[in-house]
Length: 244
Image (cartoon, rainbow, N blue to C red; front, side, top):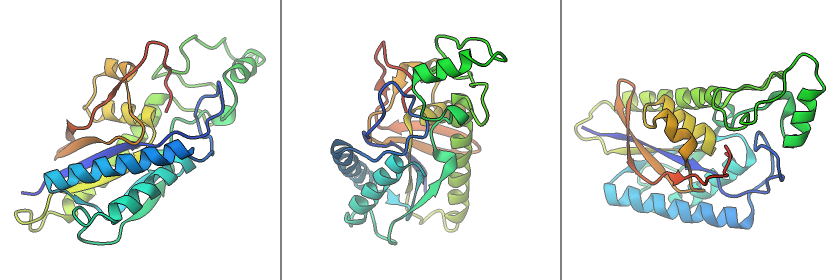
């Protein structure tokens, strides 16, 4: 019986504005970020080759530029590796639902600017000190969402894609190769999605992060069940916030 695996890939380093929650910044990867993506693709190819996983032709990615560029570099590197690409030409599919937590009308403002915006609005109380990292806090602004809300939509997408993949590959399961579906997105949204999928405990969300472009591999067991089988989560530093 064939098995299905999902590779969660956090985008590479990019030109992020200082003291600004990542939100939906549209800046590209740095050169170092491009190198991280190429290195991460080599790691993923080695894992796929070692375990005999067939990389699925469609790589899903966030519509934010840094994720799309990362996915594009993975696509090129994996396409060139005959050991893991035996079926079809790889290509990308971009999805808004894989984006990082959105801050609505405060998108891409600095931390200080957001605090000032809230303070000047008589309808809202002052922001809690942990508002950026609190999984359930949602800015009281149009279009804003919590980290947990972002994780829920990412988890729903991953679950649906893998359920569909399992159905497509069912006949004949006895002879079908094990497959690997690649998802490229953002660290905080992926960690909260992993909690929703039952892979991480709630306390793990704050304690762990993800390495840029290094794959975390989850096995899709069916019936909403998942397990972490390869790739390391990053231990979060004491002063590190909920960066994507």
